[in-house]
Image (cartoon, rainbow, N blue to C red; front, side, top):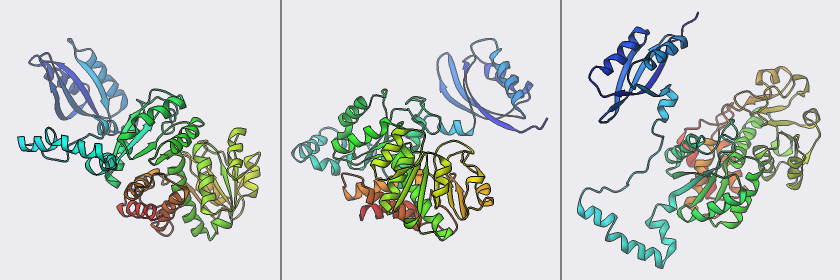
Length: 433
């Protein structure tokens, strides 16, 4: 058996009786665990909660150790067993804090009562000044109904909260924007739209996140029409922006003129359809799509694209192929045409491995590991907030994609997602449209 050291952190509730921590330590030691850090989380009258980090050699040893703790006499309770990723999410990844010191009565009078009443009167007389005297002007709501979380599907809004917190953390880190997660306990488009409208006064932008097709289209379109602040569904347009940037870079590497090429999109869900629309907005003359859903094909045709009946047909007539289906190995090597550019973007497994596509004759091939929405949404919203735009338009999104491509080093598909210069350039490009 090959042993691989495993590090886990147990959050354990231990009865507040002398010697009980020693009992836990003894059990861990007898099971072969090596104790590292011990952190006291909470001290109560009856129980003390601690994080105890333990290293073991293999999973069986970890199971034996947990069973031994469960068998201890008394009410020893293991709340969580966390690895490094789970530990990084304990307590959440975001919090709200004051920007002003509140250390004296004078501070209190300025930031709260009675001084705040004067600010309220100013905003009552001139509501637009809320953008100056409150955080509204720099705050975006991150809205989800939990129906399309990452690649996990409909797992519910609460299970999707770690993703929303991640978006908020990236908004802050990369664009200095306050992102506020909002979890909606409904899948009804009417209820989603009405709820977002009712809370919209507190925000200067709406980022829709992980809302499933097909109701995501209705929700976004209605909110764009019915609100006077920018609205963007990131799974559609954020993905499309970064994909267009990747296509620009790939075509540059392969010596292909993207605007004159025939581009085939495999998969016409929320992301695939948005990619087609983005390509057309960029100036690509011929965009074709393949999907099992007749409704999806009709949507594409309504936007000016063309559909085909099979993936084989699409592969036969396309110079550039983009795939976002989530189906590993969907594209067969024998379908690849000599000189094609293939971007198989599903994660973690692409529709065709890049090496296989290249062996079959593709001029350029890449998977979706580096194609991340992080490159788009922070700078896009920074730009629209700076400019005071009330809508996010396709010209703005194309400008964002071109800025990302311009920041990409020769031979790369996209730039590093944490390069602050990229987000600054995206924001400036959007702001100047």
